[in-house]
Amino acid sequence: MEKESRLKLISLNIEIDRHLNRVISFLRKEHPDVICLQEVLERDFPKLKSAISMEGEFVAVCIPDIERVESSFEDGGTLVINEELIQRGPEGIAFFTDLPISASHVDYYHGDGREIPRWSMGQNRLLFSKTLAKGGKAYTIGATHFTWTPDGKASDEQRQDVKELLNILARFPDIVFCGDFNAPRGGEIWGKLAKNYHDNIPEEYHSSLDPKLHRAGHLDRMVDGLFSTTEYRVSDVRLVNGISDHKAVVGMAERIS
Image 1 (cartoon, rainbow, N blue to C red):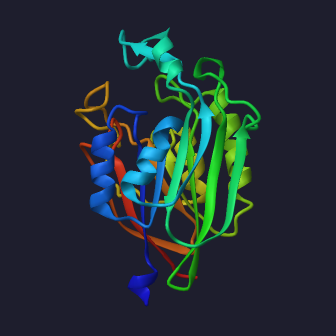
Image 2 (image 1 turned 90 degrees about the vertical axis):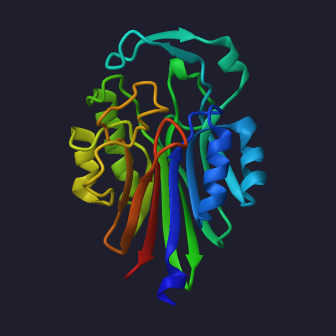
């Protein structure tokens, strides 16, 4: 019963439509119970859902409209409006699972979802969560795509957003949450999360950016997280290269109390 009740989770920023074939192949191979994807184009959501043969739900956060032209990765490069990107439509977070769902929540810590802004004008930020059942045990799994800064350093906007995110997380008696946090481990924002929740990314990993597929190349920056409350044991966590500009986070969650 113990093994049957463990839940396999994958979190991955797929970088809109740039790596779809790699992403689909990887997800088919892994056979997870829950998949949390960031930077999914709404127009690609049906294709992903069909290709991996799982039930799913999509929530938009913005309409991509900016392309980065490199001058320096650390300062974000030069940002240029890209009309072709705008035509691709909204992007957001996708949550896939075939497990029975007893509750589903979309809680905004920036914006309110009544409109989908263009990226250059701002983005909605949210925690997308579901309570699932496996092996007679209940799991609450959440996913987010946190506020970006060009250099990985904390901004006032991030400080406000993490405060609001922590307020939302505190409403859940127990939770495992994941996503692209755009704030490196060892920094101020990650530290606020790790102070309240267990950081399940093994210390041996120093970066969650793919050294070949990310525009910056090799960069020691752990920005993709997998956090949990004490009601869960999260084990066998690994980061996988060669799928997107971010590495995939794969782990097993077990409800222990």
